[in-house]
Length: 274
Image 1 (cartoon, rainbow, N blue to C red):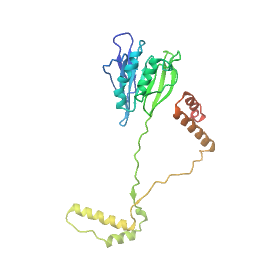
Image 2 (image 1 turned 180 degrees about the vertical axis):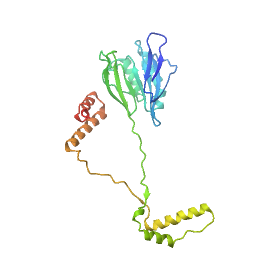
Image 3 (image 1 turned 120 degrees about the horizontal axis):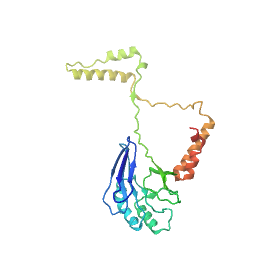
Image 4 (image 1 turned 60 degrees about the vertical axis):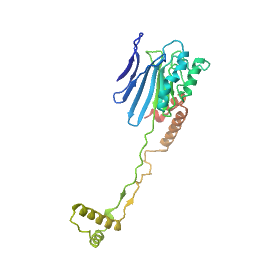
């Protein structure tokens, strides 16, 4: 599916978000002095996981107004959600730290806690024009891949939020098959339920009568499921070392998300053989 904002004042198609129809996406726009096209979006993959952000395209032209206005534009959205991101084509050479307009833009967004995650060139000329600004601990830049039909690269990132699993409590149970039959019958015969004409009271007395007898013979116990700690035959020492190496490469990539660590992780035999 496609959600787009059509460009009406000049040639070109505008900006758009393309997504699977199985994902819930809502978009909106607003009046702003920002000299750029923009589209706010909200992606919900499940009831507890939402990614919010702003897609921005700044056409070539004066950069100073955009540098100062961007913080005011993104501030309400960044403060409303810790997982807010800003991405698109800003036509800034973000790798040039000596450019005053670039420095102003980065400083203003850094004051909101937003960090530029893309650390590689995204244009055929070697410049970084397509950033990902985010303060989220769950957004990670992956890589930028060249496209044959445009001079810009496709910027890949992941949004990974751990799902909180509810702790399961062990169920209290008794082992009826270990209660000798004659002992159960003797206990039931020794403790007769209270007689009553009310059907509700009668059912309650009967339940309590059987429970009390069972508690005397085999009280309820909370049992924990035992896990099989024996390793399967196919889990060899070679596979163990391969798994250890793969986890080390994955840990190194998660630490700084550099392209070199991503390449090393992809080239690891444990990943290429599966």
